[in-house]
Length: 330
Ligand SMILES: Cc1cc2nc3c(=O)[nH]c(=O)nc-3n(C[C@H](O)[C@H](O)[C@H](O)COP(=O)(O)OP(=O)(O)OC[C@H]3O[C@@H](n4cnc5c(N)ncnc54)[C@H](O)[C@@H]3O)c2cc1C
Image (tube, rainbow, N blue to C red; front, top):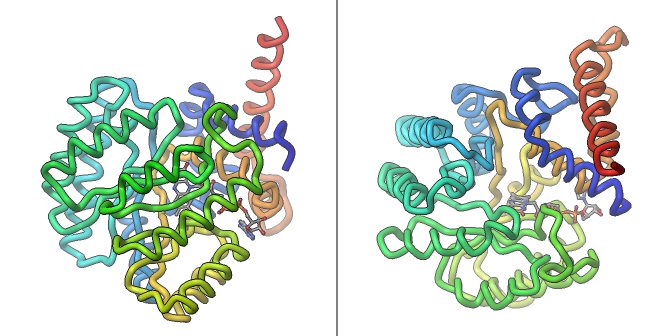
C-alpha cells in the first residue's frame, strides 16, 4: 500500500469528529466482521466459541484518547464488569487495555489508580497494556514500572518499528510482552520507515525472546514470519509453553484455527464496544485487501440492494476528508 493511502486511513482514525459520529451510526462499513459486538454478552459469546476450539482470548474494550474523567470512569467500570464475567464464567481469557482510555492524558496518577483497581480485581488474570502512539510511549512505560512494583500480572507491547525496541525489550526481559510491528504513523526520527526493516527487526526480537525465559505473545498475521519462527522453535527445541501466537478477531480465521490445531498456544485479540472507528481505520491502513474483504458485504444486502447506513457513513467520511484537505490547503 502506498504511504498516501496508509496516511489517509491513519488520518481518519485520528479524527475526533468521525470517531464520535461512528458511535451514533453503530456498526457500518463491515466493522462487525472485526469487532465482536457492543455488549459484554456479545463478547462473552465470542470468547466461548473460540475457547471451545482451544483458542484463548484477550479482550479490548474499544476506546482511546479520552479527555474526560467521567468517560475514563465508565471505561474502567466496563472493564471491571468484564473481569467479573471472566471469573464467573471461567473463560480462558485475559485483558488488553489502552491507558489513554483510562485517563493517561488527564492525569498519570489517576490513570495508575484506575489500573490498580483493575489489576486488583483481575487477581490471576493477566492484563496487557497495549502500546499506543509514540507520544504516549514513555508515559506508558512509566505507568507499567509503577504498577510492577505492586503487581506481576501486568505487561505491555514492544513495537518492532521503533529503533529503540531492542533496548527496551532487553530492559523488559522479565516482563510478559506482546511483540507487534506497530500500527501508528511515526516519524522516521523514531521508527524504521521501511517495512523490510520492521519485519527483519520483528523476527530478530522474536528469536531473542524465544531464547529467553519469559512468556511472549507473537502478534502477527504474517505467515512468512510465523513459518520462520515455527522452524526456529523446532531447531532450538524451544518449549511451546513459552509463547503463543496472537491475531486479531476476524482476520485469517483459518490460520488461527490451524495453529491451534497444530498444538501451538493461540490467542485471539477481540475488540468490542461502540468506539470502533479508530481501530477499524488502522486495520484498513495496514492492508488494502481488508477493504475488498468488507466492501461487498458492507454495501449490499443479501438481495443485492444498496444498504443505507454505509452510504451515509461513506458520504460523511468523504465530506470530512474533503473539508480537512480544503483547510490544509488554505
Ligand atoms: C493481537 C494483536 C495485537 C496488536 N496490538 C498492537 C498494539 O498494542 N500496538 C500497536 O501499535 N499495534 C498493535 N497491533 C498491530 C500491529 O502493530 C500491526 O500493525 C498489524 O498486526 C499488521 O502487521 P502484521 O504483522 O499482522 O501483517 P502485515 O505486515 O500487515 O502483513 C504482512 C504480510 O502478512 C500477510 N497478511 C497480513 N494480514 C493478512 C490478512 N488479513 N489476510 C491474508 N494475509 C495477510 C500478507 O502476506 C502480508 O503481506 C496488534 C496486532 C495484533 C495481531
